[in-house]
Image 1 (cartoon, rainbow over the protein chains, first blue to last red):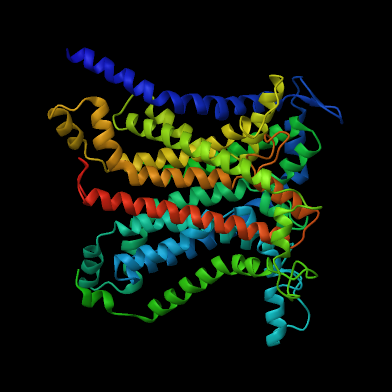
Image 2: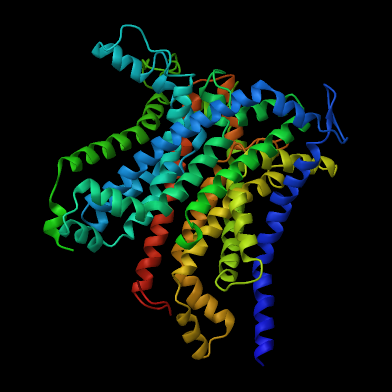
Length: 288
Length: 282
């Protein structure tokens, strides 16, 4: 009887996983394999044809543009990561520890989350009337007398792109941090205080270590979102910023699928290494 | 926890409060400016000053002249988001059930899900697009784009369901079985009601992530655009305040969807505490 139940259970498990497995096979593994194959194809200036050449990889690793794009992308990602982490931490801290009632915590958390449910493209476009030469910020600055001329670096610049990332991605930091902070037993903080720990000591030795899983999950979100985005760069950088994902998207535009494939595969590997590194430091799975 | 300890406010508390409310301003400011500018007068432009107040640009959205017709892309996006939502809920729920017990290859599945989450959207989009081409088919918003969206929504769905089921007490299910419930009855009257708030969360994620997705759709939408694609293409060329009008309309629409979802959650919670289900109240 027992082995039969066990076997039935195994069938049930297999059956329950089939839809997920098929979807990932068709739309994740399949495409990655196709990209791998295409990355060895040849581009003759008009179209990409089947072949087996390593030209694309040679070109990618010897091109100074690749390095420039990666440096720029990594710099933007680093700024966005640090900003969202600090901002996300403060916001989560405020929600969890500074607010006293569950109702106010939930209400203000919801206020942070609501914009996430509106269109991201719209939220990027919404920066244009805000940051533009005739925009709200410049008018305000000139009105108060901070500047005489409109500040041009605000829109169609790296600044605008970073601003938009912080705007859209901070929530991806706040939510996991909120979740881990809410699980911290207040008695621990009280105990630290009773033992004479100062505010910053409690923060450094109690709260931040306990928040590691939240920071890790948030970092995975923010870093992978920043590294693969090209929408904000396209809409808000005014061709002043060259990131890896944007250059891949432009390469696709010129129909050089082979070179685009090699580049996107390399980007995937870079991302997996970063995320693997984070998951090595912090056991994210235990947190679920 | 003593309330007295918690109420002791330091200067840092005020710093944090100010940062928090500035952040809210930062979150809502641009959207608010956009909403105001969508009521721009007929002769007004993309930025301030307002040259009068009118509904002209909203009219443009519904009676498209030279800007793109947003109505069809919008309809497509909503339909696609609904399909993605239902599929994400179903697939994630089933996977969540399976993940409760360790099984052979469970970490492979887990890491595949993580890969799906972090994979560059451009790679997914290009890969699916090329796969369709090499099979001699043309990808469309309801085929290739559907798959591309699922690679983005499923990781969220599966991870949420993993979290939900890790807090699920298996003894409740055992108790139901001991009392003579069939597998189906247990599922319907115990497992689903208890995990329902999580499922509604998965549904919300599935809907919005799909409704909003640009990059993963970019290479696979085929002949007909979804709303984000249409919006991006219009920004580049014929930008008029009608762009803000469509922004305002879709934002209001999103807010309505959220409001309805939360109302649904509230009703579920109310019904649950009111009895009638086998599930225990929170």
